Image (cartoon, rainbow, N blue to C red; front, side):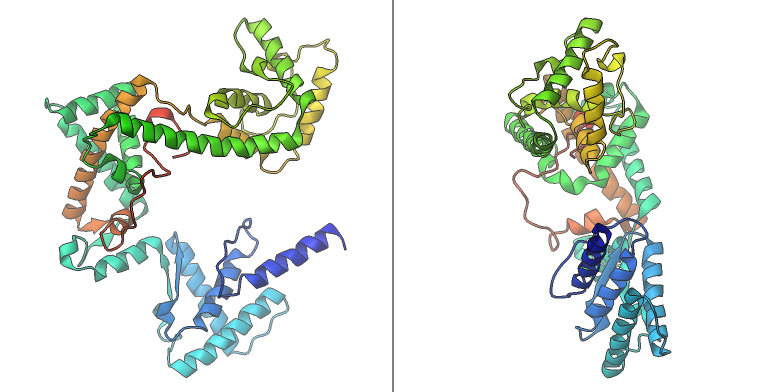
Length: 420
């Protein structure tokens, strides 16, 4: 059997397994591969197991996707009722599932054709809004609150971030904190508003750390955050190091070091690649992250893809002893390595695992600014009779146990870290 046949059979098996409603699955596939059809089939299979259709919830991110999915489910039921047939196996599977639901509909008296809204196919924001409507008024979320979405929610975040600037004229610690963050951003008010708004959008990740902004033991908080960053850096470096142990050895490390030595001599600067050793690739430790960044920079083009060629600007001058040809041949092999470019791009943006003292002072200031932004956001929620899904999820009835060292910490603004 050919490789294509093997892949086709594996794909068909995976699609069949995904319809086993006694198990959970993550489906990853490119656009146009039939993911929506598979979701519809699983939704229909789940409907066949419940007493009422409202017991099954299908959640998407956009109204367009939710409407399309509901329309396709209704169309499948209509076609099954009309006795339609299909040639393609996936269409046959959908019709069979729809036929079972028609029988279930008649048995239970669902009347889905007359009441399609009983099928709970909705956006995440609509689901959050349905929860808020069931909460008591004392929760601060119940009643007629609507859940802001998309541009409406972003507008509220931007307005709340802007409102914090009203504190600037005063002499309170809050004003000093805002000035400190602005100074770090070269006094760019636009950048400040964008950053604070972005932090508000993911405040569920940092509110337990920041609290009221009064950091009682800053040295402990700093140590915890730095340990958290170091953990994330190690995890990424372990992945890339394991990959390089499989695709390169002494010869490739020597070629990288050769390029570094040539660049060092040409530029009269210290090049990280000169620190490469014949014995092994760099460690998966924060102390070696700069060397890994240098390796990534040597192998990647500006657009993030693996290089296909090198020249004197990359450390391979004319008249060498075959190093350029050997390195180009290795690059050709690397281009066929799936996911390698993504790994290297991640390495390039990994942060240092320790804050510089200046960075830490800015972060402490940010700790004081963010609670102000949250307060302004809640004021806007109250004035507009709205909320967002983060606020809903943070209510006591919905809140999960707080982690002592959250995996996502508010270091993005200070370090440019992509992990958060």
